[in-house]
Length: 170
Image 1 (cartoon, one colour):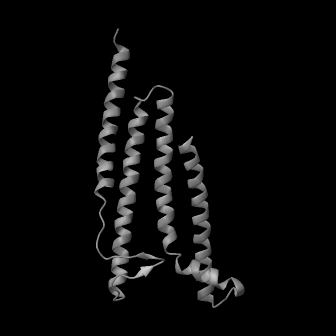
Image 2: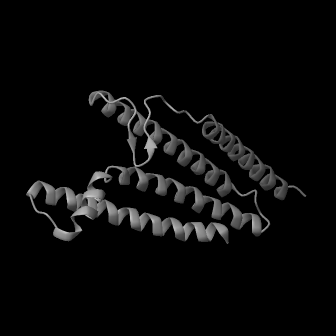
Image 3: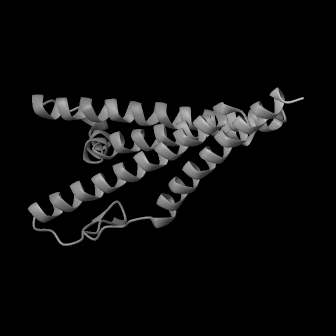
């Protein structure tokens, strides 16, 4: 039930982030054309200033939704009392790949921000209350989770194979 709620919340966040991305693109286009939207100009300025964040936010939401969807599928087999099915091994592999892709995207984003800060001769500015640093931030816990999920995927694959072999014996 919690995963179902998280699934629908993820869709709502994805829709909101997509709308803001479209608004940022519209604000950028209006800026190029020299058009000022009048009383809503402060809102458009804020959206335009932070618009570069939303593609990364959308990618993060999609990665989280992939993980949530695959977890829902795994829990469905657990509730049915049949967890050692070949599909669960694939679900765990996809979860591991989604987490790895998120981490790689995070590292690429950090590298791009560091490069922009270096080109602009800025030390470590504060954007929106958060400090942007030039030092890499590698999450060993996330990479350990990726390796662990890949190992669990193989355990589930072998369990499913052993269960199938057991069904064939008398």
